[in-house]
Image (cartoon, rainbow, N blue to C red; front, side, top):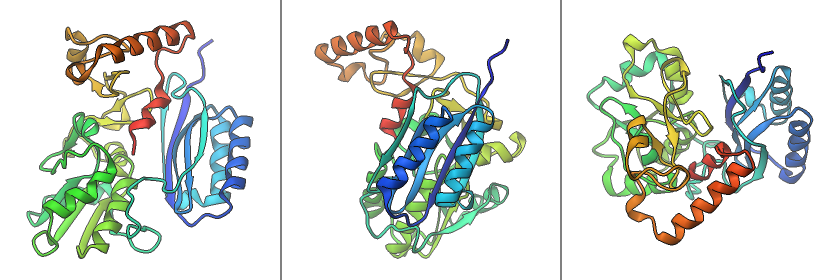
Length: 308
């Protein structure tokens, strides 16, 4: 008998929330009752996360989140996986659902103009538009829009530093931004508006929605899109791509990377071998052996450690 597939929901909504400890406990209880796995972050500014379930169980938790946080009014995207994409459920309280450390960036007060995937190509073809990727380097290495600027940031908190050093409201009159699911570019748009940029746009639903809705022959996307679960990356129509993760540095690896002499499963890859000390290598080998004994060689939900 074939095992039932797992449905995945990537979601977020900027909305003012109160009594977070009570909300956390309620959400965790419903997740446990329905064998939901993944990660949900709750903060005063809203809710963010990716969760998975089987059959009607995922529908049950989504309906509950809609009652508590109106998630259907935010961004909610579905995909699927043949195997369980996360080990367990985590419901965490945070100061921000996407860490930027810029209080002036408040999407509940102001945000840029949403642009649907069907209208995105027209916008970014405008020569007066500055197109910026708000994601981190390990994500942009997998894929990016044609002509987009890669700020080469290691964490989202560095985005504001890039803006202050490289951008000027008087020079960049129109700015368009994008990210995986829409949350980072939405918050970035609020930051840009707070700092004097007047025409600010962001891709509604993010890259994932674009890959799902825009036909391949019309797509301006090059490569694949990094995702924060065991699939590692997806391509056109959200089809899983042949990437794996380096357990040492969490960088996405191509099939060629896996053939490199510097690749050692659970320990190192071409992207981190030069920074790997003998002590860390021993530690990673011990961890990898322990995980194999536990039957958990692919710790997918730890990918979220690099999300900020």
